[in-house]
Image (cartoon, rainbow, N blue to C red; front, side, top):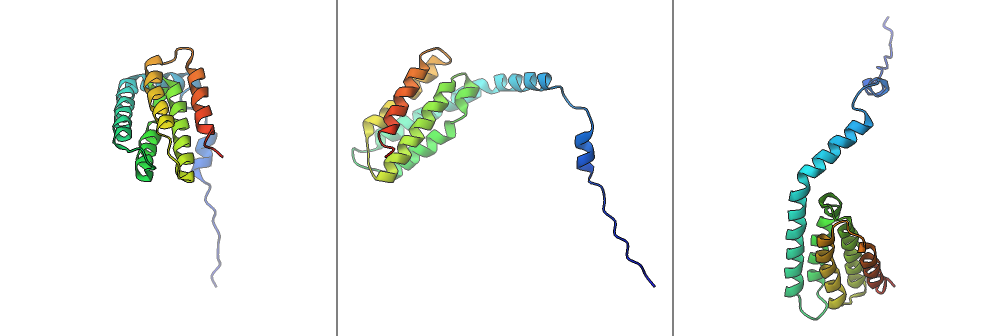
Length: 152
């Protein structure tokens, strides 16, 4: 006669999670900040390249609704979100988010406002130059107002 025996192994992960060790939080944050400092120039160069690509794409667009062109602008802008904080210009991330919102609103309603898009792109350039200087919040508020006009 045979008997069945059920064995439930204890998960090792649970045991490892309960064990003390690893880096102290302060040290982990210092290391992370050092890593971010190391990639800052690369990130800034990438943001600059994305900005120039956006400007060129906007220049190539006509005066009429261009869904493909706006989709391209959106794809470029969304790639830059997050790079502003790392490169020392956190307001750029907010401007890019506002630009993406604007493009979403315009594409949804099949409208086109070249000036509204252009002011976002120009602000992107200006905010990169400003870095963490005061005054960026007023620019961001203005951009959000522009985007909000098309949110209905």
